[in-house]
Image (cartoon, rainbow, N blue to C red; front, side, top):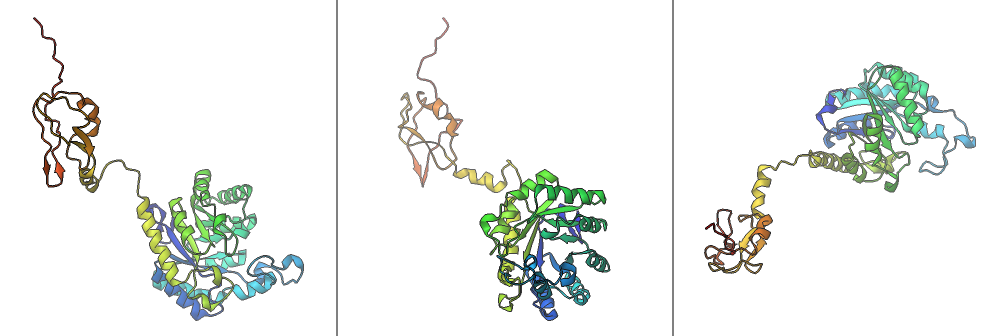
Length: 360
């Protein structure tokens, strides 16, 4: 699967800087945020395409009032009026991203947003956690035959099954599932990052993390669990303020996350029991058999004479039990040459003290 020029078969993690509301109402801030995202090493910048009217209705009733979050006390309409990215900015933001070499796409929240984004030939679509139950909407997005990234922050197993089935009904099999905790900020103890691998195994899709925890620990752990996408909110400076500022990474922090992600990719490596050249050289520091006490010719070799010690230039320790109790055919001196002791080598002949029966 590819998103823009990013090929998932290259075994790299696709890192998305989420702009969201972090422009705080300024297109100049939005533009500079895209430039900064490029400096961090991110692969993509992601927008959100909606208006307050495409999200909800302007109601003061209790159902529409936010409770128990950092946005508590506001109604939904008020929040989305503050947080949305004006649609007239999109053309400029897509161009800035393209000029920077960043992949740019968006999360639409209704069909009109999808139609609008199609005019920019976006390379993929993101379905937010709270839209996973809107199957007609998912069907419409999937019908565009572009990769579809689905967050699962509030999803039941049935929700996930139905969302995937809906995509398949539109002959869209380029699906990514993101583990997500839809709390803002999300407690790290609720991350359950082991589900990233489980989602991949259960549904046979690419998986990743849409992260709302503080810091960069969760994204790095996610990479070790098989995440191929990391999405994290990004802000120039949290002092800018705005609805999403408190759980967003600034430029320095996002850069650290990107660097740590790339290091994690390398550290994971591959299953390979063949030793590298450096590892083979390192075996010289392993243990091997050395005489640590003089042995005279004809003397029985005991544990007092021979030990398994470092370095590894002597005989393999597996021969110790075979050597103990043998009679030395010649003398072996406890010799210290610099810091090395004289080894027993396989070529050293040691004969058994017991006499062999001779045929008469």
